[in-house]
Amino acid sequence: MSKKSLVSVAVPILIITLLVSTFITRAHTPPDDAKVYFIGLVDGAVVTSPFKVKFGIKGFGITPAGTKGKIRHTAGHHHLLVDVEQLPDLDEAIPRDVRHLHFDKGETEALLELSTGKHTLQLLLGDEDHEPQAPPLFSEKITITVE
Image (cartoon, rainbow, N blue to C red; front, side, top):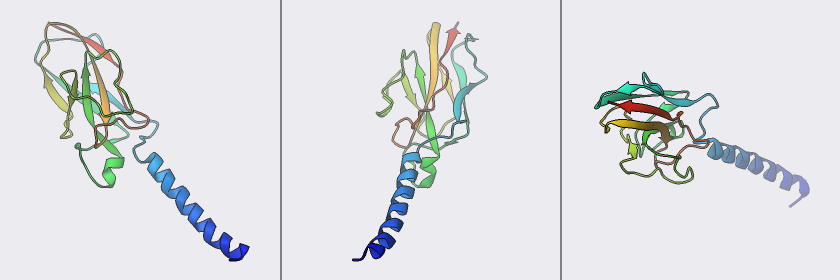
């Protein structure tokens, strides 16, 4: 094969490879301005249990866990971290236990029942497999008091 033929074949393959790898790398990457946050619940709030917690999201979508198709690359679902000292391993699926609450159906609010006292709350968005996006979308951690 001549050099000219080799170049005419190699260049398109290289371009396609770069485009595909860029898409795969950016597939679950939220835009820089994306964020998750609490609606109507602020750091230092005093609440009575049970109370409603509303989850907000900006610049990215909400979709149920296990979603297939292209939308899964531009959306996730909420996880509420209750009294968790530090974020879980961001390269692994988010744990499922009493401190890591999953909202698999794409819920954007929940009725939360907590014991009297101080508690911390933080949101962490997960993809179709419950893994955080890259970079991860998580809210500020807030502290509330339940009376």
